[in-house]
Image (cartoon, rainbow, N blue to C red; front, side, top):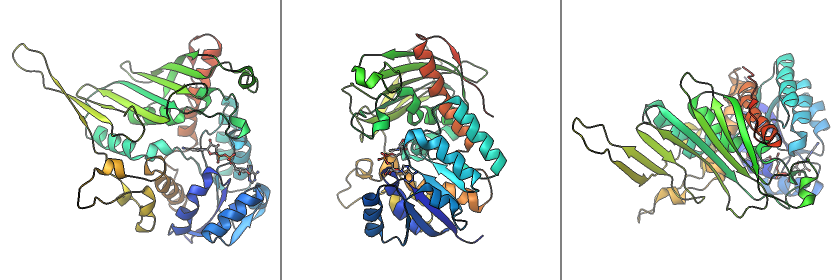
Length: 377
Ligand SMILES: NC(=O)c1ccc[n+]([C@@H]2O[C@H](COP(=O)([O-])OP(=O)(O)OC[C@H]3O[C@@H](n4cnc5c(N)ncnc54)[C@H](O)[C@@H]3O)[C@@H](O)[C@H]2O)c1
């Protein structure tokens, strides 16, 4: 297959992906697109990109463009995704896929009718902490999974206007996705409580009274498995963190409390033949980088840093956006098209990771009532 022509639409967060597409060996022409002329010009100049347009419509009307990576604002994700699929483009879209069950279904329908690939660009699924935990889990390291938890704390006041008052659970995928992916299942039902209070102006845009929401999900499995997710967006004095913890029968991986610190691994000793308490050990773990899974041209974008002679701890030195996930996301999206196969986070998986948060907010509005989460498989 010849190289792909890709349009990157929305160049705030989207700007992080410019040099990765430029260097990806399967990408030919990169087109930048942003309705903000200053932003567009700045990115074009900074990275020396030849092609640039101001509107998504121009991108969709260009038959030479094979794929579109959307990093536009949350309220536009569904509309832009559906328009791009209908225009015959493969689509990658930043999270969340959509913020209503109806829009999740509409995107799935557009994927089926267009036959094009859709990928939700969930950064946590390629963050090195997740890749490490998934590798251990595949080897049976944790034993049976007993409980999962995830959290995403981030103050989002004074960001782009569409963030104002957003129901916290509508943007919960960074906490939900790693847990569901690890357990290889979906959420069946949820009970969620809204918590705290916030200014009236933040309540208005979405009729959402909650700055924080906390939920317990029942996961689809033969034996019970629960997942607890907490999400804070406003009026909460807690530093940024996106985290997941896996509580296993033999070992537990617990996210660091403070962003940037190494996570903690707990291990339970074997059950002895004689009476006596079992012991647990705990240690901060070095999480390796997974740049070697990528083509050499884009490995630098995980932010992996070589140890210097003094041997400073690499987990502190790692850089790269969102746990080094950006080049992995680009690579998976591009290769899924080249290899004519569904991407790792296709429309069904993405819907299974967004619906829990949408249903959780519904439960919170009903005072914690049980809400069934639909299945999309
Ligand atoms: N970890 C992550 O996965 C992560 C991190 C940050 C942001 N995001 C997501 O990225 C998205 C963008 O975030 P942001 O902070 O950059 O937002 P932003 O509002 O600053 O940027 C969006 C850009 O899209 C452009 N745009 C919107 N509609 C357009 C159109 N029709 N044609 C051309 N350009 C258009 C705007 O001009 C703007 O520059 C959000 O949806 C957010 O959820 C994800």
